[in-house]
Amino acid sequence: LSNSLVLPHVLKFNAPAAAPLYAQLADIIIPNIASTLTTAEEKTAAFIQYLEDLIINLNLPNRLASLDIPQSALTILAKDALKQERLLVNNPRPMNEADILAIYHAAF
Image 1 (cartoon, helix red, strand yellow):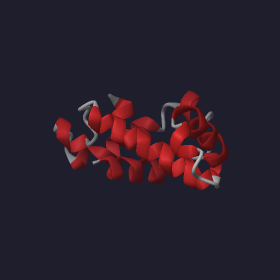
Image 2: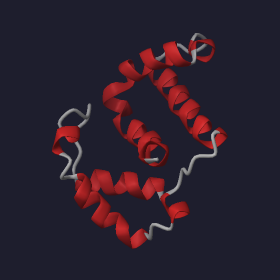
Image 3: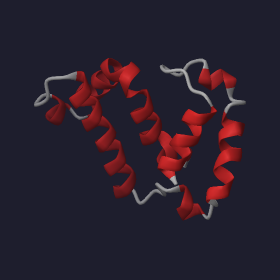
Image 4: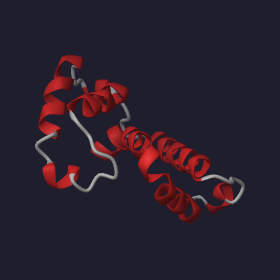
């Protein structure tokens, strides 16, 4: 559930630092599409779009608001996410509270 809600937004945030890695995933997961693209950035965008489409096609929730999470809770969610240090240290791009809050707003 958390992946269907925020993973595409996290991938978009990380894309500037992780495009070559995401492009490799695109080559594996969507080879017919990726083979027509030339740059890591294009492959990354296609990979993220594929995941967004998959979430919709599987009828998974893709908006925090659809789960009755109030917008006023986003700040608390961002503060709580900062406590997940073991996950944050492995993120390809450093994140601060403002970055996390922006991701939650994008997912709202």
